Length: 300
Ligand code: NDP
Image 1: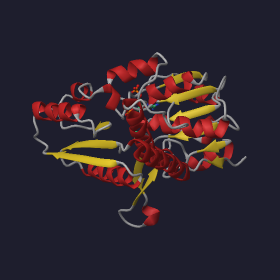
Image 2: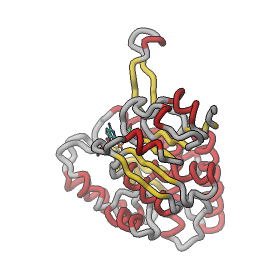
Image 3: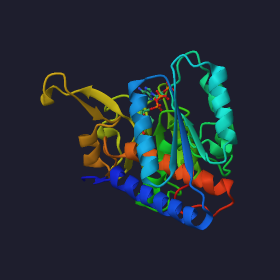
Image 4: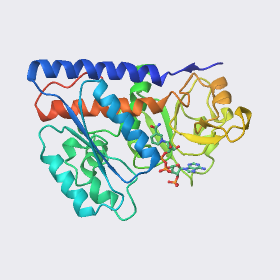
């Protein structure tokens, strides 16, 4: 069997179109422009690239992009004061603090200082609790993107066996909650899981969020299963020339694609969906803040 490729790049473009349509509607009917504030502390090169991409795509869908770039030695007090200002700013509907923060800043403290209604990353403890109890919340962007692709592919997920490999707060745990919310039977695997290959072989849906290049081979995959590969790992690629690298996922793509029914590639799978879902969360937050109807299909 050769798997259907789930094209995250194309899917993300349709999500951005839906967001742009909804933004235009809100602007015209209400005179409100959704605004996303992104706070970057320090000069981590990868974070700078992410922040630039987020700002660019925010503007492309018609929203306001507000960027705050702070020095690496910014004090916690200054950062918290900025977040307080953004919480009070009616023109800001979403606030994202780019992680990781420099070591002297307490990430939990900073994230939990964001107004939960504006917490478009879905990391605030209130949103974690709301998601865990099946209530309306802001949902972390990467798992939300995975859920959208799974719903699109399967229709109903009810009763399917899902194995999530990885139990991080930003991917594994919220992913498991979302799958449970859609009535999957969910197993969360991690570094201490016994007989991981056998656990994965029972899955109709495998979500790999580990951070280990090509760890999951095709012979762990049940024939016809859907494989969502969240991993982004850069490895050496001597075949491309000296010093060259390439991106791979946590699943061994070629062997998994031989067995799976559907699979997301890396790059071009989950990655593009993450920023698209950030934009979706921002327009959702704006609608909720103003008592407006939320766009269909952009939330959990
Ligand atoms: P973390 O490092 O926070 O978590 C990794 C998880 O994998 C942990 O729960 C760990 O278990 C588990 N794990 C590690 N080794 C094994 C093993 N041998 N067998 C089973 N489980 C194992 O990573 P993240 O969740 O932040 O990210 C995971 C991957 O997803 C990374 O490659 C990251 O780059 C990528 N990512 C991609 C995004 C996107 O937009 N596409 C967004 C976010 C992340 P334990 O808890 O026991 O240590």
